[in-house]
Length: 202
Ligand SMILES: [Fe+2]
Image (tube, protein in one colour):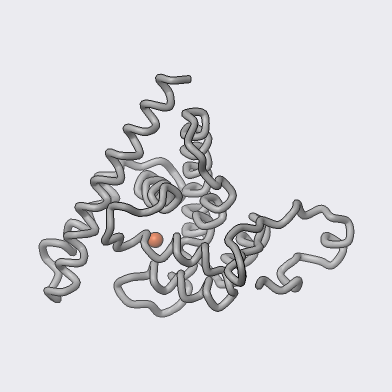
């Protein structure tokens, strides 16, 4: 669990300036973290200014997608998606392999944030199209948010994955990238169709 030292000051805790912690999951697998703590985690990890702006942009985009889908009667755990969005690239703060989603997940697991780890783990190389709606929203928000947090076309963002899928030297990683590319294309159409439907039914 996140230690209290993550709070900026004990005074914040005492004065309850920090909103109620997010609790979800069950049994031993409960994550308890709020947005302010997630922001502190990525700052303390040493993520660059541009990556922090990207994470904030992904979180904003993810929240707006969640709210649109909620209006269309979908049940989405908004805080979970927003906090995972803030944390999704934390793995870039350490030496990492091709899959920094895995690196991010490992860091979150060190903090006992296992549910969030599950969500961020699949954002680089998702292999299954039947992911949770939360995971899909995060992937979609990431694909439509550029390096400084500005909106970007998903096609542009997929350029790197496409390069990997067709030109990467390692065959195993190449097929991993190709599968992820297909899954991400599916997710984009699925989320956009859900948004459209939600907007029509408003
Ligand atoms: Fe990422």
